[in-house]
Image: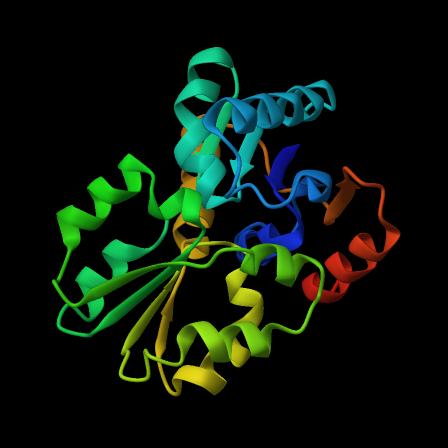
Length: 242
């Protein structure tokens, strides 16, 4: 069984891409909405939160875990890999290198949580591939607004209005692909980049390399929400279209 966790339902954007590649897998998705958002947590606080989730997933029989949250990936992946050596962790990253590969000369806006923008590992990635036409925008409280299914247009109009000449938008939080249409209404015809395809390809590679079975007779999904919110589960399956 493959485990996937996020600070809420945002990781469903990653999960959809995974199901495209593993249509008959057995999955458990953990939505940690009670601790959403992750981006404003201290390192020690976030590690403690994530460690508890990983323990729960392992106790359910999970062998491979996808960290479908950019902030948690940067802050926690090394800790988790060192502590749980018999578990494979696949960590998502903001797709900034994709801009370098596909549209290096384009003006780029990186939208991410404050925790991701300020993380030294992300900054190392950014400086390695910086095209000197990039704006890093910490989108404080946006993930939580999306999680709560709130009205994001007021937020976007207020915070994106000065970036009308952007060519590329890197969605550095797994919640943000859920509002691509709304972002396009403000910024116009931009090219979006996110890490879901890369993490899904890495997952399949790791499963094959480690000879872990992942193709079954049918798709099976278990959904867990830390706040036991039935509306979260309903919305999860609506987005997943399952």
